Length: 160
Length: 422
Image (cartoon, rainbow over all chains, first blue to last red):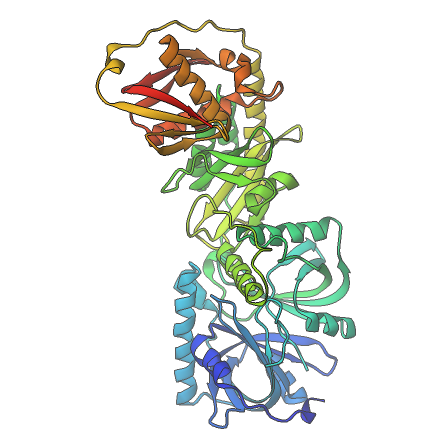
């Protein structure tokens, strides 16, 4: 069970990847019938305990995700660098949701800038690439229990 | 616990099914076998509209047409950077699509635009192609028409060599460098695979897939010896190509070449573009076949016996080196051409220097046993076009000029010296 895992302290390398390099984030949840739901996440903030993360999802596009989190608590989040494809997946437990604080808006803007730079490298016009940004963000907080290497290749799936 | 992964390929199988590439993620495999429910988030490359597909896992295919199509796509990307033997598809996971819905918000207006009527443009293109009486005109008209009528501004055509081991570029349009003479091994890369598979291959996001492959390659290089990695094949065309579509030129299932379209725009080529290119390629191939048949049936012409002018007996002299090992030809130590076109050029220059003759016919070239042209489908016209275009690009003092159907003249504005080397 998810609750049996101790909380995980995110390493310095993973923290740097999440904050400095992440262009896109996917948030995975599931309901009581094990039906999965994916939505995009934005603007991660690692809290001082290094075990808890705040990030934003769209209130409208992530409605089912929010419902699942309140019912089931389990969450999986991938942090993806779109140019070198480095990807880390964190799994853990949902703690709470709420309005964005100033720090969340700063984190949101920071990731927006990272994504803009990565979109340029891919040859994607910025005004098109940023269409996936949510217009109605809401903050969710989760505690990290497990971390996995998910960069495509032979090491994919290894525990960090 | 839920599990989220990024995938490189999601392919539509039919109106109710999609195939997902199974490559590296064993955890996803284990999850699917325990709980066959999945959801995929798709992004339309050109507009960034997002769609959620709710899926139910049915089976994994390791052979058959669906698996092959998925494998071709992955192979094409992998071979571009020499990863063909490592970056392999383990299976095509087949899912039933239970539901497909657009993600709320961010629906761009241009996605709602109606599709243009392409029938009129196709009519105009096929009319232009059927009017062409020789291969050179056909290639130019074809690529010009694809640009002016459909907006495919970056295109090139490759034709197979005598052994059908390589394709070489014979015509191009819309690139900084024409790339004429560049080669791609048949079976490798998007272009090479389109030839072997006799099937169009489309890549919606070439840059992303290339990054993906390179990353896996670097991971494998970190873990083992580099001997298993073959040399990287340079992609002809745009340096920043994001989208590519390669379509075989087939006549009676005989491969006459490959038509390749490139774009710097991600997601530029859709299913509709693939069908348009297929129709254009079929028309080009049929016209090519007719032109080649007509050329082979022409009665033999007697070449004129012209003599060298005085302009070629004074002034600067250029050295033409011919290497027998691969029939490569260098002009003043600059590479020009190799293979069959190299043999043809050596013969022309040799005849020009020894007999003083500058007028030639395709027929006499075709009948010259020293050139070792195959008895059937010698593709002489394509070699002459390649030779002429390479000379145009590389030598301003040499020229091959058409003087009528099946005839050409070799002009040299400098004195020439021919040297044969092993």
